[in-house]
Image (cartoon, rainbow, N blue to C red; front, side, top):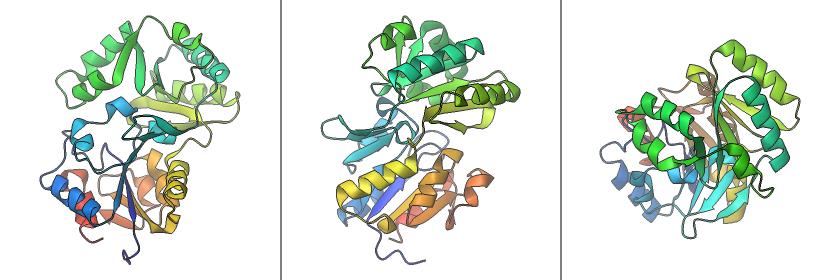
Length: 274
């Protein structure tokens, strides 16, 4: 594999750069900082909203941009302002909420760099994640609100995506069929009956193409790392696609390289070769 012309690394966080403990593996910071000093653009690319990006990643100080909410937003690290967004319209946001309520699903809309959470939903997730590595992420990335309707009564507010927990896979399947009727929406399914709903085209692959154009790079000059279904379009778009050893089997079919797992510093093993 020829890495000689790679100028940008797009790196997923959970299950990829971050260990299962939601931290960087030993030596990862030094490897990434050195690669950046040698001219490699480091672009974290995540399903998390902006304020959910962990301190250990931001404190590396190597990223000019963050791609968040699965590609719905690109944030300038210096200004913390969006330079690109592809969101659900306000009307569609409210329509999705009505459907989710009719299916009695637990859901949170991502907007303004956070996941908005009604109190009972916040309490549900806190009970689930308390004492786990996800607790810090959840606390930093969520904003409690009195109700979603109050937020989106402002017509300028639009959801980047919805994070949904369905009671079972059958409900999730029926929900997808119903939301799909709204048109121009896309879905990403996860283990444990989780579902993400976003505007069609708001994906990691499209966001990578945008940031390449913004930086004056050809897409062939990129390498991308991921582990989940939401990384398929990312790996397809990149010049070189890398799936982690711990990645979902479906993603591995789209990879040029299989790296060591997220707990074995797999990302940095490849970056050292660039």
